[in-house]
Figure (cartoon, helix red, strand yellow):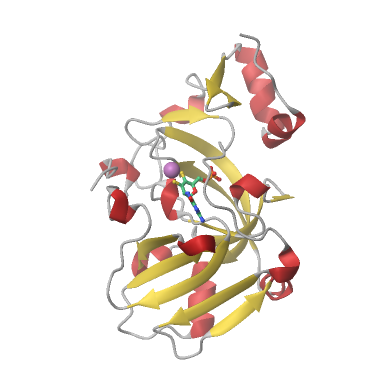
Length: 235
Ligand SMILES: Nc1nc2c(c(=O)[nH]1)N[C@H]1C(S)=C(S)[C@@H](COP(=O)(O)O)O[C@H]1N2
Ligand SMILES: [Mo]
């Protein structure tokens, strides 16, 4: 079957990934109606993280670009975007899109790991650190968890300490382009070291809480914590 690389798919693939794939003759795989370049022979799959864990978690396979995984989309318009930072905080606040861009920005390459067993490396995300939003909201000492709130009632729970890690972002760009609709336009969370369902697309709120509140997938059979290196896939 001749794979169809649409302009959208092509533009989502990093140029060097295409060049590498061309050089190594990597096969094209059909993945849920879109196409991604398989990259089993990518040398990055043999790398170790600074903490000694393998860069590619167990049971995962590297693909060359994020694969759209669906979900119930929110309003894509940056003009109507509002992010509520609230809960166990002394100084709750709301941000519009301009307000988000006015905060100190972080641009950082991060790996993501989907529970359906694909991983994507070095996605260059732009946005604001959740730790910075937490500081601005003056999170109270008894908060223990963060609930990422998204359009149409989607939520994902993350332990506070893990949500404050430097790689956890409220992101508005991937690979220096505004998020594509399927990936959460205009803003999503990125929690790189947990399975990707924790990274809520079409983000509307960040709520700090004392008591854990399992979210959309966590109440549907998926693991409450979701560590890819422990293969915490199902609850
Ligand atoms: N709002 C919202 N966010 C969501 C989802 C969703 O259904 N709704 N799905 C999650 C799941 S299961 C995954 S694997 C990732 C997929 O992100 P992607 O489509 O950008 O690859 O988004 C997560 N964030
Ligand atoms: Mo998923």
